[in-house]
Amino acid sequence: MKRYLSSSARLARTDYWHQQRDLILSVLNARPSARDSKSFLASFRKPQKSTNGDVNHSLPIRALNEIDPTTPLSTTTTAPEDEILDPINPRTGLVKLQGPFTDRQLDSIGFGMNHLRELGLVSVVVVDSELWSIERLKRAKNNGPVAVSQLMTDIREEVIRVTETLIEEGSEAIPILHPIAHLDSSPKCLPQWATSRQHQKARHAPETCHINLSDLVQIRKAIKKRITPVIPSFAINDDLKTIPVHADEILVALSESLVEAQSQKSEEAKKLTMDISPLRLLIITKTGGIPSPARSGLPHLSINLSSEHEHIASTFVWESSHPSALTNLSLARRCLMNMPQSSTALIVGHRSAMELVANLITNKPAHSASLPHELLVTSDKITTHTPTSVRLGAPIQCIRNFDDIDQDKLTHLLESSFKRVLDREAFYGRLKKSLDFVIIAGDYGGCAIVTNEVDPDNENAEAIAYLDKFAVLPSMQGDGTVDFLWLALRDESFGLGLLDALNTNGGLEGKGVGKDLVWRSRGNNPINKWYFERATGFLRVEGKTEAARKAGGWVMFWADAEDKLARKLKGRHATPLAPTGVSLPGSEGLSNPSLGLSLIEDEEQGRLLVYEKIAANIASSWK
Image (tube, rainbow, N blue to C red; front, side):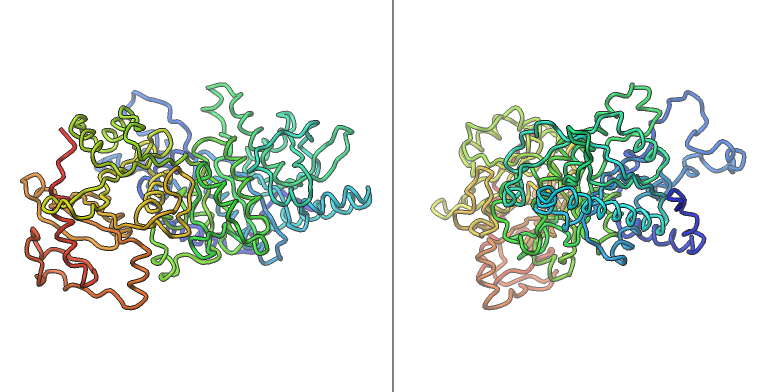
């Protein structure tokens, strides 16, 4: 009988250090920021017991006498990279393995999942295949017990095959061939978004399941020992018979039961035992991420389910090439609604197995979704195999009526984000006169405030769209809110009029003409690097006050209306005004025309003078 729990045979045949080298390179290639590393370590580190002594308890006791007494203890603690590679407290991840996969494809997946295990994520794998579609499940049941028995045999064989592959790639895994779920006597009433087109086509309502805590015993024992349980999509019906069900229902039931099991622990037990509530949902498929019309069929980089799900489902046209995409998106939403708030999902193809490591460490998409699409495509940063990161996210709303703004909540958001005291009377007095729109994320967790500003020397001129404030609560920074806000801002301003701006966030829904967006930032603001990547151009402006000069002056940014820019670039290329440091004809009036000018069209030179004048004329919002 095959011994499933041991990976020693594989390790004896392979070079252990090559595996470790690949893992280290994967971690380094993820390029985690300090915030990413801190968040990762917080998720996998057990709570530290408080101590009043002087001993540094982060060090092994046996190593204390080996420390050079002339070296400060703080320099001998474990480096973040070492902690990432040696997690203290493993966490649980749910994995949907949706084939059919060839042996080579499955090897690649097993290789990536073994790295996840070494980093501390113990996976609970549910095996699925597009061959076991909802239609086939229905046909098998209609064709009698022989057809059902054959389908269940196919599923069991695939479970064993996946288990053997994981073992061969260095993991410890065990197949659980009996059902752990129970079919609900009365299927749960699911919202419209949870009923896929496959269900509708098959005229078959989802057969929902539940898992009793007593049925989790074997799974909990496995993940406690960092062994990967591999589970078939079986359930027990009211007649106590084992029947095949859709794998999604097993995953949803697991997300509910694992969170429930964790919540029933005592507070002391939570501190001393492994947190079994799922940290990640990984949906590994043959086709990879969810295609996006805004990217000409290339995948979405990230999706905010709370504001984008219904729109994506209603505009999806890739059923033939990605038949399970919408079903997987609904699965992600159903599971994330049960999982902890910080949990995320990743829809990834078998060719992007190493992206699993980067996503686990950074909890971010492969690339920022708010980067200009042309930048991602021309630099080959996004391909058909790029995964899609999915978050439950927060609703996005667009407010155009000043009276609809909750001033207390907006004030709290701005003061918390900028760490300054708002001059409420002056700020809201100006906003009431010049408001264009405000984008709000969640319950004022983030905002983008755009005003209509006019040239003070030519009040009859057309107003420009000015990004007055862009802010996110510190508690929501790093969770994708910034990208979701920027994308909504783009759809209402410089992306307006394009087909991919047809969102349903209460704004113009893509109806209108795009307009240039202008904003400015202190010269020493660390977020400027982020702005540089998203702006069409920028201009450095010398500060007029001593405080502004100490802050490096100002950087004024603008983003051209994308439809207008596309028309211009179609006939000719933009040309540089001049190399940095060279004064330009017609630049008289600029505070300092020799500082860092960007690329613009020749006939647009005059607008920079207007932009700078308008920005300089806007009074400070702070006390």
